[in-house]
Amino acid sequence: MPAKQSDYPQQVSAVETATILELLESTVTANVPGDVVEFGCYKGDTSILLQKLLHSTDTTAKAKALWLYDSFEGLPPKTAEDASVAGDSFKAGELFVTKREVVAKFKKAGLRVPRIKKAFFEDLLDQDLPPQISFAFLDGDLYGSIKTSLALVTPRLSPGAIIIVHDYNNPELPGSAKAVDEYLHNHPTKKLAQKAALAIIR
Ligand SMILES: C[S@@+](CC[C@H](N)C(=O)[O-])C[C@H]1O[C@@H](n2cnc3c(N)ncnc32)[C@H](O)[C@@H]1O
Image (cartoon, rainbow, N blue to C red; front, side, top):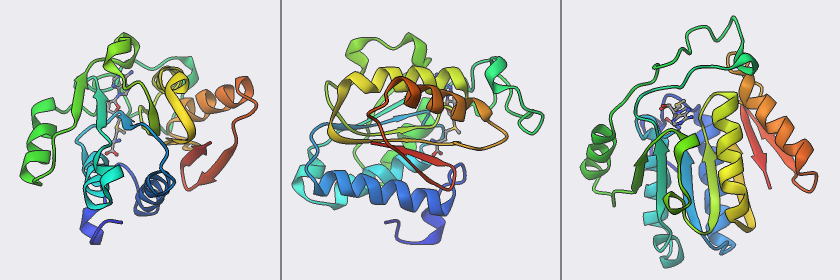
């Protein structure tokens, strides 16, 4: 858990952050094998908390690598599935940040710098992903970004792994829920739980 309220990031609410960290910790405690990934790290606010938790817990957790993915060019263009008047401000190129800023943030915090891949998710290659994943946080905002990240992580999930998708049932970003609902329809053994705007998939 973050030490103080100011540790909570802006893109993800305090309740959501607490849930993400609790569930990450549960996969560590349960010894679920594999690494931790975040698709759409933006400024790295949640990433820092994921890494802090991995550093602060037992040696099993310290052996886990954190892998971050972002275009570092902001959002890609929306598709029809993302259409929303409420979400009009989420335009292509919004949420731009540099990889250098994220690296600097980890160094400043005295944390191991994660593997950070600058790419659109759609262009990622097999070798850009860990062979096994225990925990995935998917925060790409848009239909195509969530759909692609779900497709990339699924074949690598260990038994007991958890996927969390942000912006589920967020009227500003309806594409996220569409991608999750389609995924659940195509993977009927997967179970959904919800907390705030998080879809928790096991
Ligand atoms: C809402 S922000 C992520 C916030 C971050 N997870 C946090 O907790 O602070 C969304 C990020 O996803 C990235 N993104 C969205 N779709 C992408 C795609 N298809 N490929 C690469 N990056 C993408 C954007 O560049 C942006 O930085």
